[in-house]
Image (cartoon, rainbow, N blue to C red; front, side):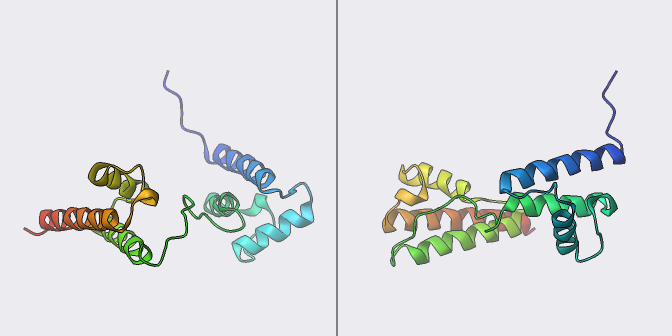
Amino acid sequence: MPPTAPTAAQRIALRKRAIFAAAGKAGLDLRDAAERGRMVRELTGGRCASLSQCSLAELNAILDHLNRGREGYAGRRRVTPSAERAPLLSKVDALLAELHRVTGTVKPLSYADGVARRVCKRSSLDFCDTDDLKKVVAALATTLRHELSKRVP
């Protein structure tokens, strides 16, 4: 017999358990009802006073907030680029964002790492010098042109 999909009440209960687990990892003590109510009111804009009043979408938003942490999700930590590498790395970021806009699929920095591996024989962008970064930018620009040519009839 195939497993049945969880009911709405089961999904809400699972989400609440995940919220408590994420809060524990973030160092928050949600056993205190006042603290928990303050957090819920703050994150829902005052629409809910407790977790039991929250909809599934609001519980998802609370869980996302807790998983991001205090400083937000920063992605993979990168080294601070030198003055000559910084414009090239920002160009890589811009090309990845444009590829995301054109293709509809997210192209993370690991995609650019793969390009660096293939084009420059470097394990990631962190180890590329300026000449290697220029090659990565050229490869991403070529990929973008190719994706744009597929879209235009």
